[in-house]
Length: 67
Image (cartoon, rainbow, N blue to C red; front, side):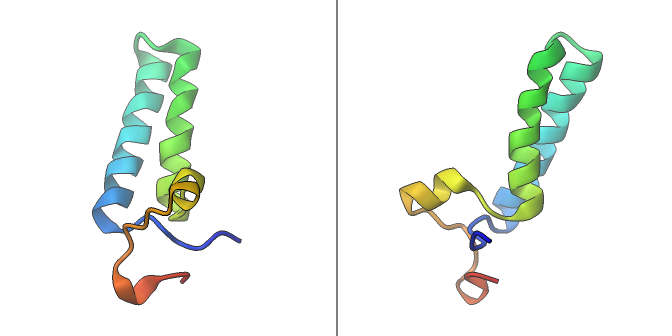
């Protein structure tokens, strides 16, 4: 399992953005492209981002690495 690298505010913003894009896909102009909203939604819910891992980013507070 990947280490947690998405922290507090980052997590909230990802979840909100993912839900907004999914809603625009379901009820608005995006159509099937709205499924792209699953990426930020899942990375926010799981607390891990593969791209952050590759680039060496981590927005988790110091006491929560890997947990």
